[in-house]
Length: 328
Length: 288
Image (spheres, each protein chain N blue to C red):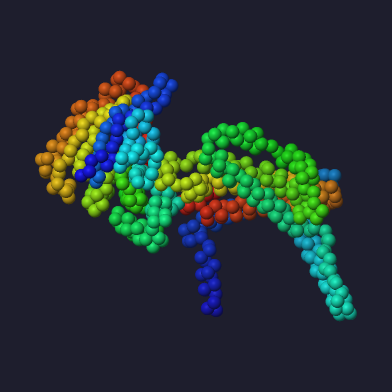
């Protein structure tokens, strides 16, 4: 019995303190109430709408499809395990009969499940986002430090910033198939097309925010740098980058949000086996469960987008030197 | 005292405007000896900061030049360290790291790691800031920040220390403390100092010479007052000292009789007055 109080104190540390507790409770209750109202309205309205695929799914059907998708995933995993088990047994038997035999382990070519599609989407969006950041932050620093370069590049940035992913996609598709020709491709073309589309659409907020952050360094700090005769590299590393960090992170968060939105559209058209393709396939499939499954995908896409934003916020809080700044 | 350690010769600067060049400063001639403490005093907008920035190399002279040890200087460098009005510490570095940045830059290849560490600690101790070495600038008071700014400048071991209203943004008590500290440090290190100030008492208390500037445009040196008070100086003893009060009177009469400014200009040049008001507001904002 002595273990319980110590366990509790460990948990207690992560809970809000007494004065904030009521506040926190109030907040949670309000959030819960909002969700409840939404679910009730959804249930009421959904049953009123008749579509070509039956009535629009309510929360209950969607929840059922969610468990269906989980079950499918488990079944697929079991099949995969069984497949490898069979191969290994067969290989073991072959080796027992003839120790010199060359045995291979064939890869499993099962259908991607909803969860492996989530994984593919995350992998694709992060690749595109990291590529965009690697391009945008250095470019933003160089452009932001030089008013001439800024004047030269600003029109181009303003021109390409508002272009929709759907407009980029055909061009990217053609370019990837023209330029990426390999006997044993390391990456699938659909993956590359999705990645580059995400990169093209999501680099602008980071680029612009980095430029603004870098060009607005306090003149006093610039004078400090001049008096110390810091060279270009040290100036960038010790003065420019730290003072631009808050703006850069604002840009990165906007970029990641855009990247995730763009990804779904890109995957639909590029047929990259992620959530976008899942939605598209279900739409084409047109079975009575399809609408519910798309609703599951919509909710999951929203949740992941929210989680990605929170992760960036955590990272921002860790990296930002100005701990007094309120981040939301 | 070796003359012409630092020489300002025919120094002038003009800025291009749509109505032709605006001569801000002209014909500034001054020879400063090694270890001399010079105050620049004058009404706001008279070009005191411009003089300082020219010596620092942050601005380029249109005419004349600055000669340090027989060599003309026209780019900034750590041998002319600047203490900025609003401290200008890097907010993402601790007190120690702020001084370290300067020390690493100036003594790279000359001091080893341990020597650098000792030198940084030594300079923080000089301004009595050792206790806050790991604090960020946001966590210490304005007076402490200014102390660290001074430590950073001293740590560069400059030939000339340039101070742009270093105590202007501080309350009177903190300012007095820092003036005393500065006098102690000056007694130990015997630096050559040029300090801009608005404060007549500060100028008389700290300086060997007070350089009084006329009003702009085309500002220049109006009078130079030699302060021959024995050091160490004590502000309380000096308060009743006739010589001290005589010097104060000299400076005050220069500023408020010979160079009366605001009323005259407000009539003659409303634009310039507006500029002055804007400047005063900006300065106030900086302080807030």
